[in-house]
Length: 101
Image (tube, rainbow, N blue to C red):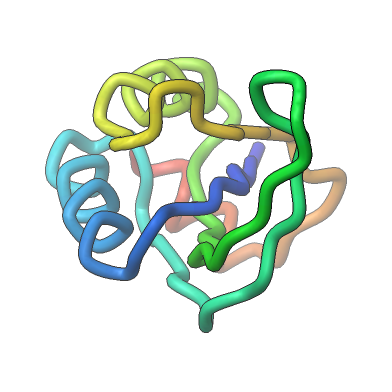
């Protein structure tokens, strides 16, 4: 089975560094690093805003929890927003690719 992880980063350099580490460790097969987006969020009891880089990481269901835990330790934010979920459907080639993790 396949899984995805969504996580924003402060910049593309950090996203790529963390993504490469997770790939090298065999926890994810790919990271898609998006274009900058504007974020408005509540933090420490106040509203804040900034620019972030959205990322989507592809992994297997079996590696999902380990990938999320490792991502949390590698991420530069004090409390990163990391959300992972199991996919209901995937193509046969994708299942094979991610199932090899």
